[in-house]
Length: 509
View 1 (tube, rainbow, N blue to C red):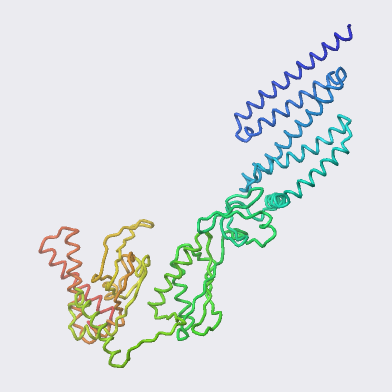
View 2: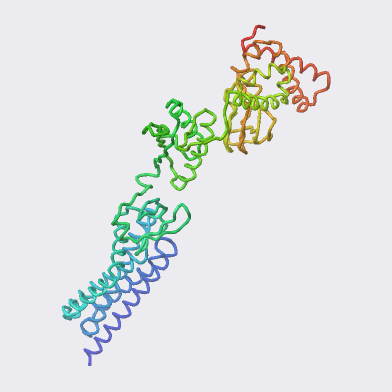
C-alpha cells in the first residue's frame, strides 16, 4: 500500500509539474506573439512544442514506469505532434519568410500540406516500429501497392504537382514575371500545384499545366533584368540613302515614351527586297507589359516622320489609273495646290507686306509637313528659323513655367500661325507646340524667305512694323500703357526688330 501511495503521489506531482510548465510556456508564447507579427502565425506550432515538452517531462518523472503501455502510446503521439509542429515551423520559415517575403516569390499552402503529410507518414512508420514495437513490413507493402495504384490513376496530376514543386524550388519563373510558354505570352499571376496561371496582353487568363512548362522552352522576359530588346522591320524605297532613313528612325525613337535611351537603339540594313530596302530596328524597353503600345506608337510616328522627310514606303501593289497623265495635267495639279497655299498665305497677317508676285514666288519654296497627334514640332528653348502656317488640324501653345509645370496658353486651328520671330530673327522658341489633332503645316524657313528679302529689302521694314505692333499690343494689355507710351513703345520695338532682321538675313543696314 505504501508503494502504491508513493507512486500515486509521484505521478500526481509529475502531472501537476508538467501542466504548470505547459501553462507557463503557453502564456509566454501568447505574450511574444502579441508583441511580434512574425511570431503570431507560428503561435499554434510553438504551443504544440510546449505540449510535447511537458508530456516528455511527465513521462520521465515516473509515468513511464507506472503505466508502461499507456506511456508508449502517449510517447508515440507526442512525437507525432512534435514532428508536425517542427515541420510547420520549418515550412513557415522557408516558405513564408524566405521565399515570399525576402525572395518575393510564392509558396502555395498545398505544397506545405503535401510535404507535411509525407513526412508524418514516414515518421509514423518509424515510431510504430521503434516505440510501439509493431512490425510495419506488411503495412509498408500495402501502402506501396496503394501508392502505385493512386500514382497510375493520377499520373498526369502527380506529374504537374512534381513539376510545380520543381518550379518553386528552382525558381525559373515567379509571380510577376513576363514569360512565353506553351504558345502563350503573359504575366505570371500564380503558380499552383497543377498549373501556372498567366494574364496575356489581351487581358485573358491562361492556365498552363506545370509539366508542360518544364518540358518545353520557356522564355522569361524578366530575367536577368527587366530590360528587353524588341525588334521591328520596315521597308523603304531604294532611292532613299540609308543614313537618312536611320536618322529619321532615331528621331522617332527618341520621342516615344518607354523606349530606353541606353543602350542606344540600333538600326541596320538586313536585306534588299523586291520592292524595298529592309531595315531592322532594335530598341530597348524596361516595361514589357507596354511593348504592344510602344510598337504601335513607333510605327504610327514613323509614317508621319517619313512623310515629312520625303521617305517613301513602297507597296507591292500595282495601281492602274484609267486616265491619261500629261505634262499639262501635272502642271495643272501643281498650279491648283500652289493656288490653295497662296490663298492661305494671303490671309496671314505677317505676310500682308508681300505683293502677290512675291507670294507666288515664295509658294514655290515652301514645304508641307504632316504631324501626328502628340508630336511636338516646336519645343520651348530650341533654336529655330522656320515659320508655320496651320493648314489643317489643331495645336496647343504650351509654356513651361518651371520644370514639370506646363500651361496651355492658347489653342490654334487652320489659318493660324506660329514661329514668326524665329523665322525673322533666329530667336529661340519661347513656347512649345503640341499637336492635339493630326495637323498639316505650310512651313517657311530662313533659306526660302531670304531670296524674298534680298529682292525687296523694304519688306523688312513692313515686317518689323507689323511685329512691333503685335508685341506692343501685348505689352499694352499686360502693362496697361496709355496711347503716348504705346506709340513710343511701337517705335522702339520696331527699330530693334528691323535691326535684328537685317542682321539675321545679312541685309545692308
